[in-house]
Image (cartoon, rainbow, N blue to C red):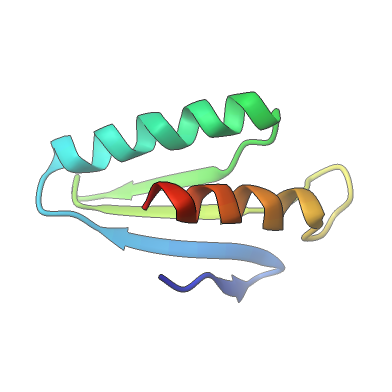
Length: 77
């Protein structure tokens, strides 16, 4: 899986075979984000594509918090 940098954000696009698969992974990601108190921007397209965007709003840029959460998300996948 490959995170890209777009518009000063880390972005990951994931495709799923079903909306249930997408929802189950998103729940795990939400739990990680809550634990880290650092939450991604999330977009769902057609119930089969999940786009995650990480950006530290307080800093106005990508920070170590974003890279750390990205690494934790990768471990789930």
